[in-house]
Length: 204
Image (tube, rainbow, N blue to C red; front, side, top):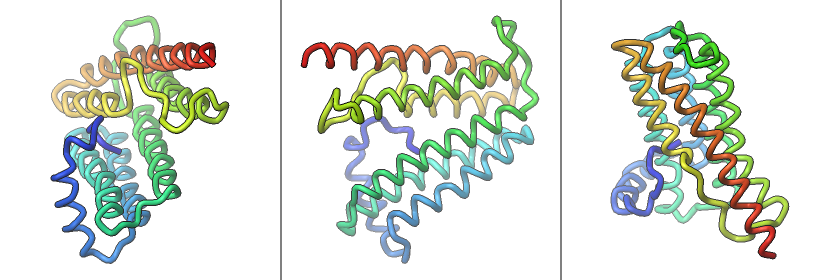
């Protein structure tokens, strides 16, 4: 998990992280698995309405997600399976946090649905945004590069969610508003990617 959309902008910082953490006897794939620990704890404390603690653990999980790739590059251990595992763990992390939201005592916003309905729409939109990309590659609509685009990619989703969790420490309604915003924008993003894939398919 990462808050950065373009990691290459932080390549110098990433190298320093890779050099430092490569001294610890863990492989890049093990670092990927380790990043699940603070994510699980973040989900636990989020479900208990301990928002600031959850946000802090969320940041730690995000940082550790950056460590695996940095260590892989420094050690020359980058692999296709490592990239695959990182993507799978990313999905688990986001699903864990969204699952925890179902247990948070959040107020309804008055926008059409109860808040748990918006949480499920957010989960669906986030997963569909990701699946629209992987399906385009699976069906050979796009080759080589990944399908990009959409108003809200994963990095932006996590930023909005993080801000909502922090704001909930002062008033939980702000997290409810963040969830509604995420539910709407993730589903728009999924539709945008489908539309992009449609254009690429027609061009072939």
